[in-house]
Amino acid sequence: MSETVSTKSCMTLNLGNYRNFIQEVQNDPAKANFSFSAKTLWKGGTITETTARERVIKADEPEVLGGQDSAVDPVELLLAALSSCVSIGLVTQAAKRGVDFEDFEIEVTGDLDLRGYLGLDESIRSGFTNVQYIVRIKSDAPPEALEEILRAAEKTSPMLDNIRNGVPVTSRLEMID
Image (cartoon, rainbow, N blue to C red; front, side):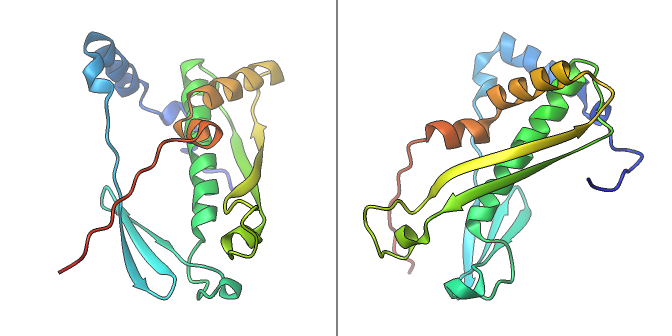
């Protein structure tokens, strides 16, 4: 588990803002429609730099895949996005129920057959064959309450939904002048 920090608490979630937004959406469902975006710039080799809401995320491939191993791999970013989203859901669902955690961590693993990515076997997909995670929580709450919180977090997780159910993706090519 990670080091304990005095401000680490589910109760630091701003439930007032959260509940106010729920009320706004109930009054005007159009307020629930969000559009998130990110822009990725190529930095040479396999290195990229993505900006989303003025925050920068770097990515690179391991050396064995031709990269410099200077940052996390994009598939690791997907795993991080999943575990981060479930983490936020856990905190939100716990705070809504008045439950606090002393600490928690999520260990996520995805299995990949790189023959698909490497173009060596067209019958093998390029993506993960499976993803699994373990949630470890330190809390005074009973295990049944923690299980309920986890299931609620999973039910409302956009990332888990995207991975489990897929999402339509389109693309187009534009030439740079």
